[in-house]
Image 1 (cartoon, rainbow, N blue to C red):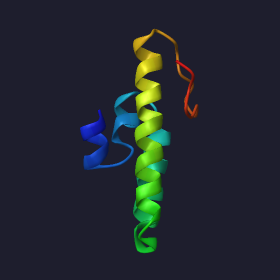
Image 2 (image 1 turned 180 degrees about the horizontal axis):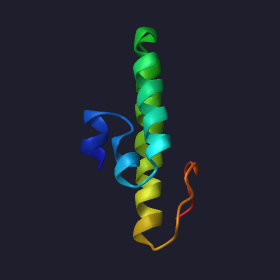
Image 3 (image 1 turned 90 degrees about the vertical axis):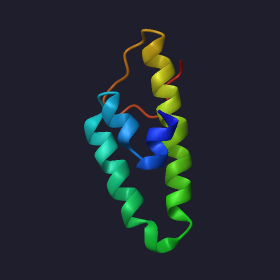
Amino acid sequence: MALLAFVQAGLPHIVFGQVAKGIVIIVAFWMSVPTGFGPLLILVAALIDAYKVGNALKAGRPVKKWEFFPQS
Protein backbone atom coordinates (compact mmCIF):
# COMPACT_ATOMS: atom_id res chain seq x y z
CA MET A 1 0.00 0.00 0.00
CA ALA A 2 2.93 2.34 0.58
CA LEU A 3 3.87 2.09 -3.09
CA LEU A 4 0.29 2.89 -4.02
CA ALA A 5 0.49 5.99 -1.82
CA PHE A 6 3.59 7.13 -3.68
CA VAL A 7 1.69 6.83 -6.96
CA GLN A 8 -1.08 9.06 -5.58
CA ALA A 9 -1.64 10.10 -1.98
CA GLY A 10 -5.09 8.96 -0.89
CA LEU A 11 -5.38 5.84 -3.05
CA PRO A 12 -4.76 3.40 -0.17
CA HIS A 13 -7.67 4.98 1.71
CA ILE A 14 -9.94 4.37 -1.27
CA VAL A 15 -8.77 0.75 -1.41
CA PHE A 16 -9.47 0.37 2.34
CA GLY A 17 -13.03 1.63 1.82
CA GLN A 18 -12.62 5.21 3.04
CA VAL A 19 -13.52 6.70 -0.34
CA ALA A 20 -14.50 10.22 0.76
CA LYS A 21 -11.40 10.53 2.94
CA GLY A 22 -9.20 9.36 0.05
CA ILE A 23 -10.74 11.89 -2.33
CA VAL A 24 -10.24 14.70 0.20
CA ILE A 25 -6.58 13.71 0.59
CA ILE A 26 -6.10 13.64 -3.20
CA VAL A 27 -7.68 17.10 -3.61
CA ALA A 28 -5.69 18.54 -0.69
CA PHE A 29 -2.48 17.08 -2.12
CA TRP A 30 -2.97 18.64 -5.55
CA MET A 31 -4.15 21.98 -4.13
CA SER A 32 -1.00 22.18 -2.00
CA VAL A 33 1.40 21.54 -4.91
CA PRO A 34 2.06 25.28 -5.50
CA THR A 35 3.33 25.62 -1.92
CA GLY A 36 6.13 23.13 -2.53
CA PHE A 37 6.34 21.85 1.05
CA GLY A 38 2.64 21.03 1.52
CA PRO A 39 2.53 17.89 -0.65
CA LEU A 40 5.35 16.33 1.36
CA LEU A 41 3.50 16.90 4.63
CA ILE A 42 0.25 15.51 3.22
CA LEU A 43 2.05 12.49 1.73
CA VAL A 44 3.77 11.63 5.01
CA ALA A 45 0.56 12.04 7.02
CA ALA A 46 -1.40 9.96 4.47
CA LEU A 47 1.27 7.21 4.55
CA ILE A 48 1.19 7.00 8.34
CA ASP A 49 -2.62 7.03 8.40
CA ALA A 50 -2.89 4.36 5.69
CA TYR A 51 -0.40 2.18 7.59
CA LYS A 52 -2.40 2.51 10.82
CA VAL A 53 -5.72 1.89 9.05
CA GLY A 54 -4.28 -1.20 7.35
CA ASN A 55 -2.99 -2.59 10.63
CA ALA A 56 -6.33 -1.99 12.36
CA LEU A 57 -8.22 -3.71 9.54
CA LYS A 58 -5.76 -6.61 9.53
CA ALA A 59 -6.32 -7.03 13.28
CA GLY A 60 -10.06 -7.29 12.61
CA ARG A 61 -10.93 -3.94 14.16
CA PRO A 62 -13.46 -1.89 12.18
CA VAL A 63 -12.37 1.60 11.19
CA LYS A 64 -14.87 4.43 10.90
CA LYS A 65 -15.31 6.37 7.69
CA TRP A 66 -13.44 9.52 8.85
CA GLU A 67 -11.19 8.00 11.53
CA PHE A 68 -7.61 9.28 11.32
CA PHE A 69 -4.62 7.45 12.84
CA PRO A 70 -6.62 4.62 14.51
CA GLN A 71 -5.09 2.69 17.37
CA SER A 72 -4.30 -0.85 16.26
